[in-house]
Amino acid sequence: MYNWELQNAIVAFVDMLRPSFPQQAELYQDGLHSFATFASDMLTMMGYSPR
Image (cartoon, rainbow, N blue to C red; front, side, top):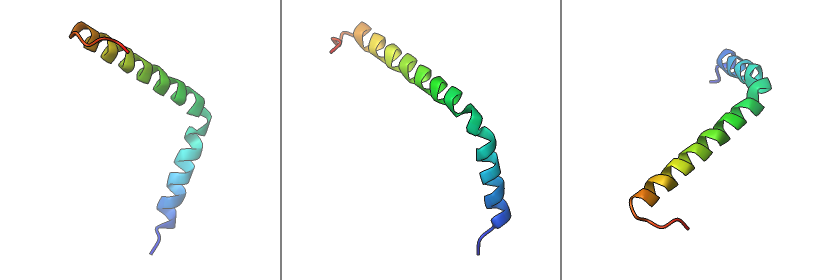
């Protein structure tokens, strides 16, 4: 019923990525901040007041 080899491969892959989690989190936060700034600037240019 379970594919243990696939499950073990997924666990090994996630464990391999674990050291880069802080960098990935920082990259995500930077991207989110950039998107929010862009959306805010775009809406301000369209005439919506910033809140």
